Image (tube, rainbow, N blue to C red; front, side, top):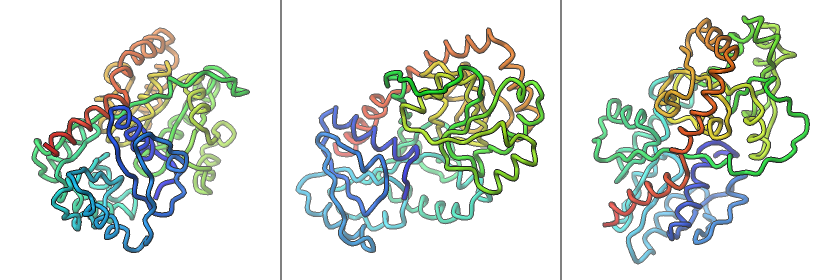
Length: 348
C-alpha cells in the first residue's frame, strides 16, 4: 500500500531489532512497490510471496495453521480480515499509530474506511502496541480499550548514525526545513501562510519541503497567491540526504494538528536541528522542553513563535543541546525490546 513512509520504516527497523534479539519470522507479502521491503535483508526473517492477492488473508491464515508452535501475527496495517484470524496457536498483535482518522474524519474521505477497519483490528487483537502515551489515552477514551491491553512502544531514529557525506550545495542555516506529507492534518498551508506574513522570515530564510511528493497544482497556486513561490521548494531525499538537510537547517518546523508520535522531530533532535512545533497530539510528549511550540490552528501564533525563536541564537543553541539528550530516549533498540516483551507475555 505504501512506497515509503513512517510505517514502512517502523516495520523495517522492528524486524532488524527483533533479529538482533534472536527472533525469527516471515514476511508475507503481495506484489508491492515498497522501497524498504524491496531492499530488506534481515537475518532470520524470510520474505514469502502470497500467490492470490484477492485471497491473501485466507492464504496467510492457512500458513499460520501449518505452524506447529505458538506464534505472533503482527500485520503492518488495519484490515477487516483480521476478524478471520482464528488460528488458536496464533496471537494477533496490532500497532496503532494514531487516532487521526477518528479525530479529524473530515480531512480525508478515506478516513471513514480506515476507522471501520481499525476498529475491527483493535477489537480482534490479543494485544495492541501504541507508539505514544497520547495514542494509548486516545484508544482508551475513544474506543474504550482496557489499559492492560495496550503497551506503549515509542519509535526511534538512527539517521544520526549515518556518516556525513558531501551532498553538494547545502547552505547552512539559510532554510527552514519541513519533512513529510503536507495535506490535511499535516497543516503545511497554515505554516507557509504564517511564513508569508513575516518579512523577517522571508528575508532571512527559504523553505525546503523534503518528501511528500512534488507540489500539486493546488499547492503551487497557494504559494503563488501567497507570493512565496520562489521561496519554497520541494525535494526528494534518501536517508543520507535527509540527514544532511537536518544537519544544515535553521530549524525543523512541524505544524501538524495532531501526531500519534512524530518521527521527524526525533530525527531532527538527534542531528542537532532545533525543533519548532505544534502542540498537537503527542508532539510535546516526545520533544519535551527541547522544542518551542505554537498553536497550529492560529497563523499568528506560528508566525510569532517562528520569528522570535529563530531570532534568538542562544535559545536555538539550547534547543539543539537539549534535543540531543531527549533524542537518546528514542532508539529502535528500545522499540524492539519493548515489542519483544509484549510478544513474550502473550506467548507465555
